[in-house]
Image (tube, rainbow, N blue to C red; front, side, top):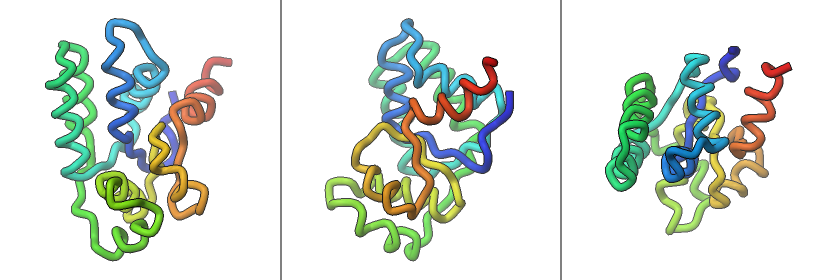
Length: 147
């Protein structure tokens, strides 16, 4: 398996989608497992880590805990610089402050944001950061390897 190019930030929506339907295997779950197997470069911030831990506790299972631990254990954590937050802020409303921090993390590190959250549509369309939905990530990173 070939890891995706560059760094990847998996938005909380991807993680929640992967663990909420356990034991059913979702596309989000398959994507995360593929990225872990491919030793992808996961990036994030303190807010993202707290969100992962919160949802792993709200939707408890051994698989959810293991998935959170695997992602967080390999995640490169950064403190987002103000200039990157300011560059991303025009694309987010006040209710989307966490999404703005995640986008700013991607901008600062040149990472791809994988998210099904529509709050990230604007910044992706504007080309400020690379953004993919789970379906797009699967088509690009997993499907080519099945041939």
